[in-house]
Amino acid sequence: MGNLKHYYQALKSGDVFFDEYRKSALILGAVTILHAVFALFFLLTDVLVLSVYNIAVVAAYQGILLLIKKKRVYLAYILTCIEVVVHAILATLLVGFASGFQVYCVAMIAVSCYVTFTWECFKKGTAETLLFSLFSMFGYFGCYALSKYVEPFFVVDELASTIMYIVNALLMFTIIFSFMMLLFWDINHRSDKLAAKNSQLDEMSKKDPLTKLYNRRFMNYELNRRMSDLMTDGKIFGLIMADIDNFKKVNDTYGHEAGDDVLIAVANEFTNALRGDDCVCRWGGEEFLVIINGNHHVTGEVAERIRKRIEELSIETGGHSLKVTMTFGISESIPGLRVERLIQIADERLYKGKQSGKNCVIKE
Image (cartoon, rainbow, N blue to C red):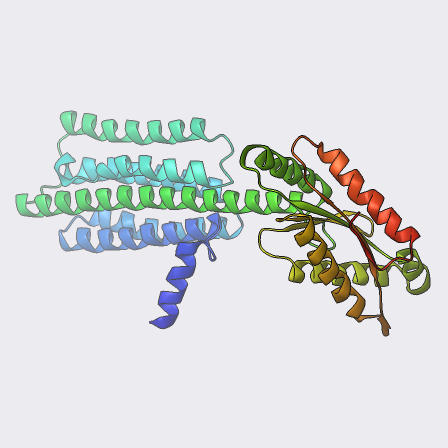
């Protein structure tokens, strides 16, 4: 029971989802069982022609099942539609319209809506739904027309006829309800998958693939948003431009894989050192840009804290233990100052730090 409950929850959440081949096989299995029940019912009511027909249909559906296994779902569905309509017409001819077998033509409209809109093998969508629905509708009215001009071949007592009609009507509504629920389920599942995919793509468009930090494009957007908040709400923020010292030497000495390991390790240190409302990106190459929610003093303290963390960091790569340092330049947001100028100030101070010995924080 626990495994069944777990499997149901997985199906409900979309973690496990049947493809159209498995779903068509399950539907065909249900139809086969229904025909087996019909065969038994007609045998008990002495309508042997319909009993034999249903037995033959059960055998024929095994061949249709082989078509599904060969991934010929389209043909399998067409044959199933034809069989349902033929069965309705034959049952109307033999036991009369009052028996209610024509209602399965109505049920097939709901089935057609489901399969043509959700299964990949149906490429034409709305046109195919209309064609299958019209075919089912003509089957229903064909049964009605026959009942007006042809007397049933077998006389079934009123009680048996009433039971047949009630059972068939209940099955029709069950089929319609089930396939409408399946349609809504498929639509919701596809919508959830699309939303998750869009969210993933949106996240990927913001992130640097190596370090998993934000990229330059997103940081430009975020800087402009923060500057807008500064103009309206007075929310001051600081900017840190940081660069790994002698990074080219790391690549030249240990290789680019080692350089990538250094970038990833440094990125992790930035992420661990910052608060939730701060924002860091890989600005380019070995440069990192950080937005700090606070004034010049707070920004300087954060930069110094990160500098020390990097200085103490030991990076294991390719059998080597590497030590690196970083130089930092900071600036503070000023209402009316362009974002480009704010970045330039931090960059100029970073350059000043490089010129004065590296591994330092330049605030002025």
